[in-house]
Length: 582
Image (cartoon, rainbow, N blue to C red):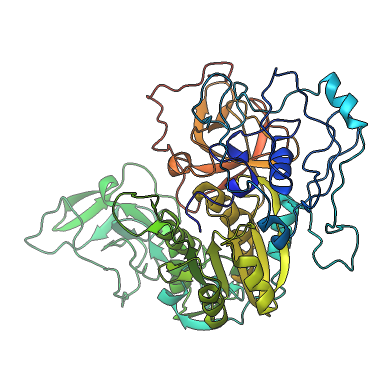
């Protein structure tokens, strides 16, 4: 199952996933996890006076680890229970949607952490501190995360930056480089420095149309009969080597890019010269003295033979192809593009038409392959797979791609087959859950030496989060690309966030008269939404707890040209006022 309905819902309540604001305690995400890990309890609304209790998700046989409640002064630990334990959790299907305090309609705010979210985190109450001292409810047999011999013990979610580092370091050595024709090297990474095979330019050339002149003027000029004297006569053209040297006081017409004849001291532009008849001949005059070397590109001006033009690890762009050709190359040695294969899991997905009878359109299949192409990855169109463990196993076992990307199935629901299939394949799980919103249940596994799997959540924006968090650094390392230095831009408006998790928020560039370039958060940031990211220039990395206007945040630029987004133009009104509030 995938496409926007399952993975995050498996951790929260139906109608309001954790990323969309569902919460009833101090940390909306830990509380949502607790709802999954233990029997469902009625949602408690702010101001109800019932309190949140001291331990969330602790009930007999639930398989959940007890967590201290708010106000205890101890750091709460996020614990994910095993696949088998979670499958039998009562009420996990989300049959009791969370509603707003004044309406029976499920509350799904545009900004899942907006202050007006009735289920957003609230300050600890006195009752929280009172209940925090209560003994935990019995939990029965459960995995022990501190016991290294317990194979079912869950792994805590990794911090966002740590997960990205692991993804990049998962590649110990990129694939061996290959030599190919220039055009085939586009988008690949140089395996060796690009060294000039010749001087550039290889000889003195004219930078302008005009006359090559020798010494001070005026200059003798033989102009062919019958041609206008208002322009230079056809003389030395590009691609034709001059056969005679210029003597002092002589001039000859020359075209841009043509080789300057021996003896020439400068080039006089055609618009600066005047040809006059004189004594049966013609002379070229200049309004002012022509300094030596004017408008001549000297040999080796750009580089000398043997100079390093680009280091190993440089991305081969169209400009690099042009430079390589100018420097004398017919072939380049570069690392191959990573090869990826995309499996979109879910019985509920439609390949065409409108949603119907509980089925929805597949948004990830049409998006992921072009996104990977933009990252310089070779991939075929996404392949749909049914929610069938056998089909997933056969597809993964038969794949020869460097990286397999799956969508959906990374949680612990009854048709989430990724974890069991990885165990069956003997894969090594490197990342199993990341402390980021959206996209918490992403994973990274090593299928075999040099081959990896990235499991993306099924919700579309959560999948984008996983793609940027795990797939992009992994694929970049496979392509032997150097990591880009962090790019930071001030935030144009405050962004709320969970207390312990990083948040990735679509932003658009905005030119502010006072602060210069800023990143303005876009609406529609829920894990199942693509409207925000479709208009975005980048993703802002919001630290736990959120950020204020003016805070400089790291940006993950999208792999296509940034600019004024479709979501904002300088002339268009915005929803943000001077204070950054709506």
